[in-house]
Image 1 (cartoon, rainbow, N blue to C red):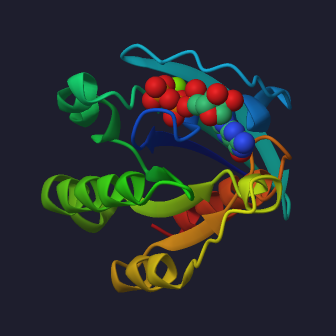
Image 2 (tube, protein in one colour):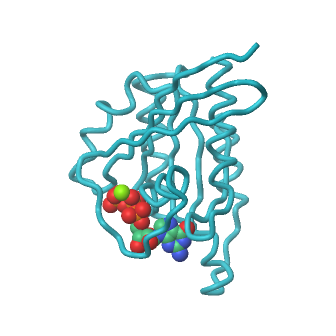
Length: 172
Ligand code: GTP
Ligand code: MG
């Protein structure tokens, strides 16, 4: 027998970290090197199958620019999961994750599955960026969130992040 699930997921994080790129890669397997700032939010749907289970993901891609911050609750309230994205080349963007986690814990508590994603790992090779994930991994652990390192550009670990958040959402 197969089972069906419908989940709502929200992407949060600072502007330009790659939220829209992660979603475009996941849903359409495309990448655009130009940045088009998301205004308010946009929506995409994707169905995935695994272990005889069918999961329908309704994914909200929010705007990262600070002027849109106050719209956050519209999208994360009633969400089963939140994917918090930072850019591995920007420690400021990681600090923004901490702000979102605090806000989520305060407003929706433990009813939402949080996954932290460090995006743009391709920069490590291409720009000889030195990146030590350790502090980010231990922060994620301390707040009970999974952590993934992704590249929307190279399509690395994107499917895995959505698969694992789906598995966790099935448990709550
Ligand atoms: P807002 O909508 O303003 O919040 O930004 P966003 O988080 O949706 O960022 P977006 O996906 O628009 O990506 C911002 C820029 O980063 C774009 O120029 C992308 O091409 C680039 N980018 C996204 N993902 C990656 C990646 O994995 N590697 C590299 N090198 N660049 C990326
Ligand atoms: Mg965007």
